[in-house]
Image (cartoon, rainbow, N blue to C red; front, side):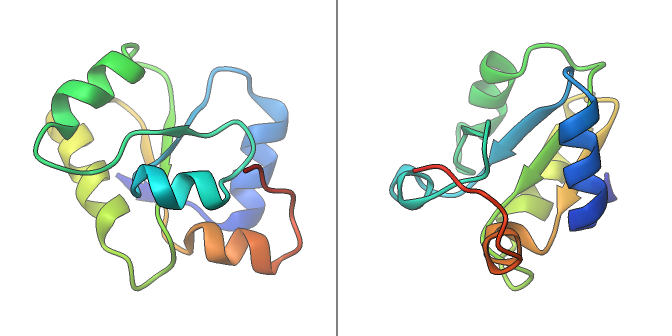
Length: 108
């Protein structure tokens, strides 16, 4: 797992079509707002099963994020994904609060 900064995330999302963006917060939080193009796979006891259904291609880059730097859901998700054999997992540690505070577009 590697961390990714907002600018690098933005560049990756703009220039690559093979990236999966995953919010690991609850469905309620996801529905309030999320990053454009993100899917929702909440961290929990069945995360391993659900992430493999949602993102079956383990050789493509995946970016996970949660609320902010204090939130520990995305590091936990990234660790589980590393353990499951995902090749390139990025954790956007600053999370969706950072994205929204920068005035970038959100959905929801």
